[in-house]
Every structure is written in structure tokens, then in C-alpha cells.
Image (cartoon, rainbow, N blue to C red; front, side):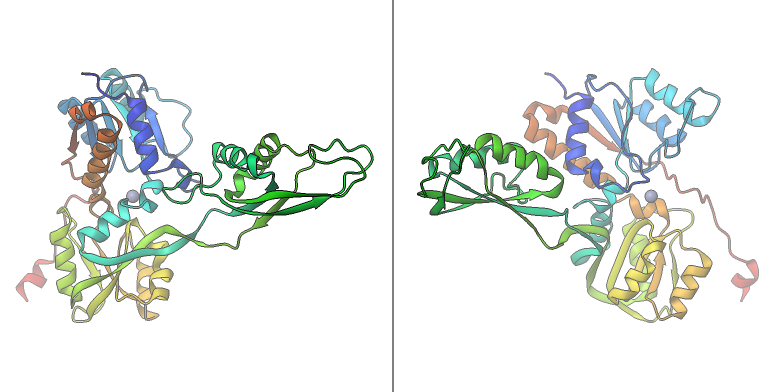
Length: 388
Ligand SMILES: [Zn+2]
């Protein structure tokens, strides 16, 4: 039985979390590993830290998938002089590849934020800050009816006509074209100096703007006419189905303190616990979430009018000023805990993708790291407070 390769699994993960959707400053994808190596064991973790690599190698992982990148900043050496170089050497020596899906996993459907929203029991979720859809054109051309399918096929080959899970989407209608070939023309239909009236199909297809020139070339190659009429209609900007953070509703609204307890119970426990900001008695129903550091979305959470915003790494001034300005209550479960719910979801999605690729790929085992990599290792409260 042949196991999938690192390359196979990278292709499946890239399809789930397209690298092109990562932020410009981010680095995602394969950090180390041989794409030709076979993979039997895949471990998922939030942080590529030494304790996690200990766990991965002890379990015999062939691939470690982490949310955070190991080498976010430019690196000129992976010598063992520092812990990152040392960690890479250990991974390579033990034949364990390292792959990262970071901000591309945050925005993805069933990604980090959907997993967090699901863990907290939110319903009717949608993005907190909606991303615009990729700019697109509608291309229209006029072609003899018996060449229409060849033009549609040529456009489909360069990526035109893809709408969601549907490929080759096109529309055509029959009409009548008229033209008069001039001096020097070499018409496929008709002759120089005589006005021609002929049946034509009007063909329309949607094309991502980034593919415009490839699509125009494809039309010209597949089209029989010497001079090809093409309309390029730039479509108005539309909202995509994804974006940063998520907003949803609780089926059973609760006071803030009780909701924070619910968050603590739904996420893995950490020494830092879950903190909340706001009146403990205020009832929360509409909830925004952003796994990891979501302080940059404080204004978005206020704008959409949620009752509470769940995110991590909240700093004193932005948090207190947002509250004073009438923004939502805040719940901070910690960075690691807020991103952890994605791990089992990612493992399940990968197994589904592998099963579609090849049923024998179900021999692959997955494992979710149990190491708590939140940097906070404890907290204490004043003994005076306990005495009160
Ligand atoms: Zn993070």
C-alpha cells in the first residue's frame, strides 16, 4: 500500500487553505521536507516550538502542520547556533516535514475562525470584515455558431468560467452579425467590398481580471475570424464569502461572566485562564470572534454592533478605550487556546481530501498536539483578595 507523499498532502492543504489568501507579510507553505517522501503520520499543532517537535518526533510524525510559521522574518542561517536552526536540523534529520497554514487558514471556510465560532456555539456566522471578491471581467465575443464551443473550451482551459464549484460556465445566444470586408482584408466568410450578413453566437464568460490577457489570447487562437470583436466588461466589486474574523449569534444568550465561563469550558485549558472586560451581568447574544491577535478588528466589532468580541492579545489602551467608547464587551481566552479548535478540523478536512484522492490514503494517521504552548505558565491572585 503506497502512502501519499509530502507533495500530495501539501497540494491538499494548499487547496483547503490557498496560500494566495495569506496576508502579504505572512509566510506559509512548506518550510522543510522532501515532497517525494511518503507520509504515514501527520501531527497538527499551533506553534512550531521545541516541545512540539519533541512530541512530533516521539510519535514518529512524517509531517508537522502548524498554524504559526517558524521563519516569519528573513533568515540567513539555519545553523544550530539558535533554537530555530536546531529545530529544523532535528526535523530534517528525523525525516519530518514542516508545513504552515497561517493567515490563509484564518480566513478560509472551516478555518481558524469558523472553528472557533463553532466551538463557542455560534450560529449564522459570517465574516466580521468581509473581503472583496477577486476583481473579474465578463468577456463577450461574437463567433460563428459552429466555433462557439471551441472558444468556450479554450477559455475554460485558461481558467475562465469558474463560479464556485462549477467550471466552464458560459452563456451563448444566437444572433446575426454584419460586416463589410475592406481592401486588404482576408475574410473567412464573405468577400472584399460586399456587405455580409451571417449567423453568429454571442458568447459570454466570467474571467478573473488577473487572467484577462490569457483569456484574450485564448479567444484569438480559437476564433476563426481575422478580426475578432471582444467586449471586456469590468464587473462591479462584490463581497467575497470570506474575510477576517466571524460574527454569529448564541442560541441561548447569557450574562458576560457566564459566557466567559462557557468559552473557558469550550476551549483547551491554559494557566492564564479566560479574562473578560465589561459588566459581568450584561447579556450577550451577538458575538464576534477572531482567533489569535484580533485587536485590529476592535472597530469592526463595534461597527457591526455585537455584544461581545472574543479575541486574544488585547492591550491595555486599545481595550479600555474601546470599552469606554461604547464598544462590545471583550473576552480574551489567550492566543493559543483561541486558535487550537482549528487543529482537529484541519485534520478531519485533510483526511477527507486524502480519501477523495485515493481510498488507500486512509492509512494516514493524524494526531493533535497536546502540548500547551501558551507562553503564560501560571497566575496568582493577591492573598489579601482571598481573605476579603
Ligand atoms: Zn496566531
